[in-house]
Length: 111
Image 1 (cartoon, one colour):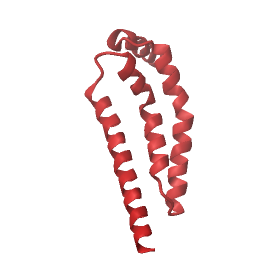
Image 2 (tube, helix red, strand yellow; image 1 turned 180 degrees about the horizontal axis):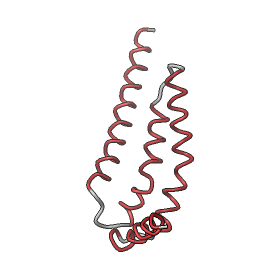
Image 3 (cartoon, one colour; image 1 turned 60 degrees about the vertical axis):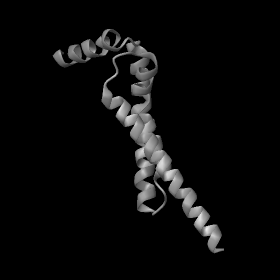
């Protein structure tokens, strides 16, 4: 029972520490878990089939940070690592898109 009380107190402290509704944060956090799991499954499947993993990685990353994006938008006193993860996800998405476009341009130049 003590562990449940600790989780409950942490959950309710979100309102005090970050100024967000803990129920909205929790709903986003828990609601993203199945989509994150499905995305990881697609990453593994695509990797085994030598298919691009960019889209499933970006989807998994978006699910992973979705509750924290809410925290960034609606909250205050957001930890620095939340910004770092979101920025890393954006950099990875931009880098993979650039590489994909470059490969497509090179393929069209050869033809």
